[in-house]
Length: 393
Image (cartoon, rainbow, N blue to C red; front, side):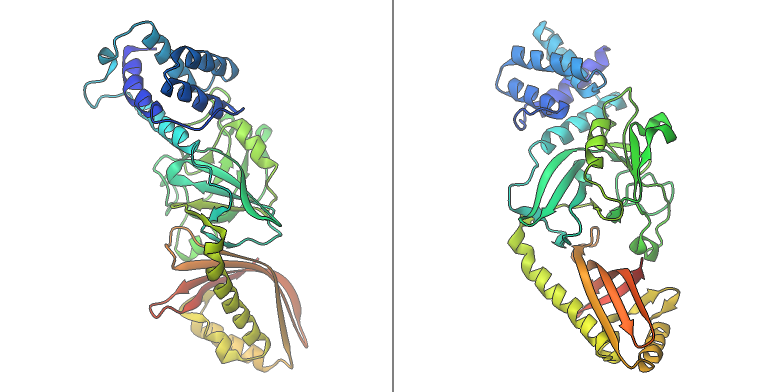
């Protein structure tokens, strides 16, 4: 370890360490946090033993190796003031490790208390047994279980993002998207370069909202890391979410293709479940009224739910309205039934866009179809909600 590495590590990393973390558990990340807890308690020798154990277990965990080396130096009597860097010429690798330390140590304390749910989840269909939530600013991935008792976190861990942060707009901008996606498949490591580690879970970016907003690019995945490293720095990919190979393997067990929402969030808030109930109930009533008006052939009432700038299948609002008036007038009856409804406050838009996803059964005297529909609702200046985008899958 060079003198410059030791210097930057001591200044940036030990300062972070002493801020404190959660208690010891079984994973490497928890072992690292437990060692920092020992440092914080003044038990340097015990911390050294814990770090030594960690580095034997995960020799590619560079952050653990760095702390271990620095603690060895400190216990050997190396003067701390001689190791503090003087100026901005810190090795970029050390800045990455310092940021990773901050993210990890803060993340170990970030598991929400029981009863708290992501505010973006107004309603999660029982058909979605789990959801993945990535808090991009905090480099933290959560697996949320959805069962009869509600939603609760079953695991969480560090996860890195794009080199230029989040908020993807164009191909090649090296940013991770903000949005709501689904995993489409699993690609094993045998089919991928070593960069992807244990494998990859591709996402369906760009989705309908991305397309509406003219966002470009592709190949946004959740994937592992090369086997010569434990994890990558917080900002290091070309736009994907990366994680330790062991964490990726664990994540796979919770993912069902097309049935596990993946929320990539720019601002993740955990709130009491009851706090979203009023919003959820009022929004479900709005969707039900939209359904009822369509089923009763109240075409004008139905069309009032569509914004002036609504588009679908190459039609603008005017063409869509003409089409619906013509079709509905030709029907003797229309029956629309909805099930498996989920409602999300769409990330990156404040509280101005909600996304509804549901199964729809449509039948009339001469046509029937079952489809999965996504709707994007926007609150207008008067406070009313209207549909701006609608797609069938």
